[in-house]
Image (cartoon, rainbow, N blue to C red):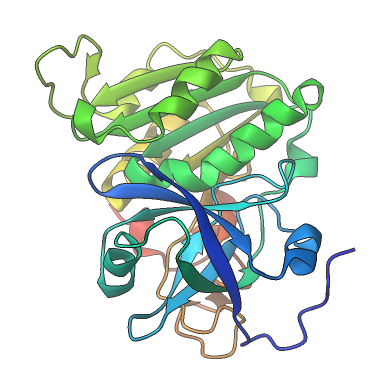
Length: 281
């Protein structure tokens, strides 16, 4: 059984076991807690996040991109975006960082069983969805069809390429698009919403999981609505400036909700009730 968190503010040391470079800005860090007994008992769910810290560089929330069906290590996919994340990109195998968590409301994996799942992501937005996809593949008979639509700025910016190739071989219907082509690219060019034009989902048993930058997010929501998806059939993760991760500091306040404890996973129906900038046209 997982060991209880005796101090919600107490970080635990974790060692960098492996670093997978996804593109020039994103790397996936494979981590294991230095306390092996704690590491073996550690449990989390897809959609949750860790609070990551390094001395002199602060602390930040990072989505877990691995799946609990593959225990022994935790994957954090990190995009260079600030002081801490830049410092993390300077880490080497064998270095240590501090982690506390997991925190947040996860994806409702039990409710998704039997559903056809449509994953729509842009850039680093594929990271939290990666946890769900791999979890579905590890329990393949519990889920319906899996479709991944992924958009990047250029072919060089496509992250998780090894995952995408493996998913395709495992029967996941993967489609990629880029904003601007590069020499040798013969794939789609355009918004990720263009990949949705030929989809014919069985709406009675479909759920869409969306994660990406606000502009992409708004466009995808409009497209899903035109396809017949209800707000209850759309799930996403919300990024907010979290400081404590446990609902005390209220830095991630969202019109009566807190991203760290009420989310980060929300249905679109829940978000419609809040004043969310990402939903504004």
